[in-house]
Image 1 (cartoon, helix red, strand yellow):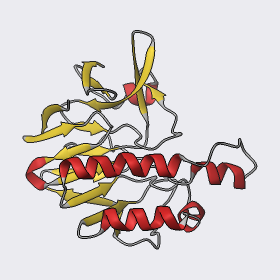
Image 2 (tube, one colour):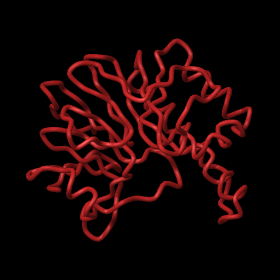
Image 3 (cartoon, helix red, strand yellow):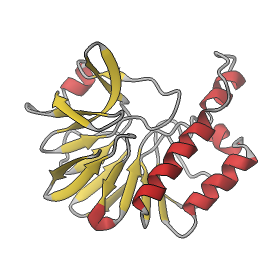
Length: 213
């Protein structure tokens, strides 16, 4: 139920979950996991949310890893809601994440919520280039052949807003993968200024569904 497309000549799969799979590299990519969001909100005196989002996000990630069996995983930044949330990850979640990471080349891209390394294994980078594609947290308008996250894009279909990928000839922006993550509508000026004419929004849900941006 994925949507297959090409970027910079490479065949990529947008998965219904919001993950990206690059078969030629055996690579799974997710963005904006925001582990620990409920804990961070409570710690800072914000809204109290049921503390289950890390478990739900890990379950979804585990299902995508089981489905694709990737040799490499890239997390495109804001994987933790802040660095304290990384330190406060429950032991059960830490062990589950360690099992998912085991035997895989796992890279954490630095985001604006979690800039800097976290003591949880894997490698930590500002960007990763696997030619011809470059992975970063926030899209750079001066670059092409890039894959990024950050904006949590959402598009409406029949009145319902759904997280979506944004795709044009130059770049792909991934939806937020984590539970409890909000979204930026595709008509927002920040996204309108980034995407070229003819871009697609690929909706997540039961199947990955492309619609005009």
